[in-house]
Length: 300
Length: 314
Image (tube, rainbow over the protein chains, first blue to last red):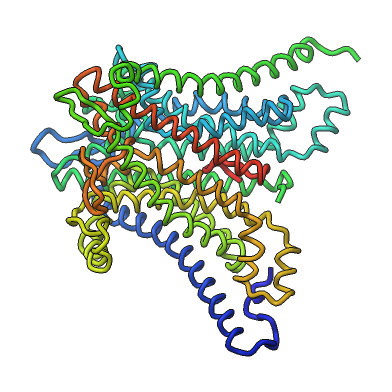
């Protein structure tokens, strides 16, 4: 659609100028409202990021990144335990969710019949729609109730959220691998599993990694699933998932509930760190995908 | 040609591994439903279905009913969608019909990034930046203009329904606009060009061709956004203020099912209270499952190619 199509209008007016002017006016108003809507959405993103950056930057220091919370009544300190905890929780969740997700993606795009594949994809979509707070209750009942909170439980809850994202992304990119490539491999006598491992997966690797990174970015910021599974943690760096691990989102949540201004400025510092990490992952994921999608002819 | 041993076991192995993984995903969904309902069992046998319409919530007398929270969930969700749906449609129109080609991608990516902001960060921003602005400017303005409607006549307060609604709007917009945009992109170019050739303005073309063609998809996308807003707990719990009483006041504190679970589960004192919160979670789960199924079936029927898992790459 050419960008000037709207301004051309219907040429010489047949029914008088008033009606035509009104139609053009309505058109103009609608164009302006649509532009404003897009502008507002982008502005909200900018405002949130700028607020977090401007309020959080002053808290970021070596001490903030390497120390734990101060003793009661003292100022300073940091969120080292939350940073380490988030890294471990997200890494464990990734190890649990990514391999299974890729296997599901291979099943729905290579092995399953059309109906079965569509059913599995539907289940994944529904799984993606489960509220994360409910995921938290589920994992609490499964792994925590009667025992204690643990990093394992928290990581499992994150993995449940990550799985459909990884699997659905994997399916979408695997489905983009040109049929001709697969068929020529099979025609040369390559077995199906070798075709999948040597031709299909390498071709789609960039997209699969992108999907995994988007999954990581998504769960790194999750609070709700950790609230019941890994939120009662000690004020010290722990690397043992056998006990509850701290995390940046839960730390922000609890700092916000404290009344002191210094807790709030720490919350902003933690929010800045989190948002930086997550936006970086998103940008990285998109860059990888843009690079790799040259290998597969995209459907669109 | 003789095949090696690895080739003979390779195929069935990969096939069964992938099948097993897919079965695990299905089993996971079943297990989620079972475990959540299992935990709600005690409250269900205690209160039965009346839990849904009883509004007394008192941990001391151990009387629990969900009505007020479900009301809060309904009000915040619908109000958020009321704002988010037209806005998202406008954004999608801007991105598909209006914007110059060079800015479509960057603007589209920025709108999608809105969904990447963690809810706890959005909640923090909501309570410290957004709420004071609402309290000082928007709420008094709404009150003086629309104060004759009970909804807008209440006492202004820094926490409550209004900030929660706006935060949920911010969360729903990227989802609805992403799917709507994909739907708009499926409208055949000849139809649009035909309308323009007949002398329609761009808006008339959108009204007569793009919107009717995409109606089903838009409805599906909107319901998808509704599903997102319905289950949000953390950001809402940070800005909504918590109360056990229904009020029609848009400015005052309220509570939603998800936010009540988030705020009360850890501090719960009796097993009946924990089970009642799980009952809330079970209601939420059923709502989310139904809403998501409907949304995805609608989108899938009209546009089989459009993936309905927001946040995955497209």
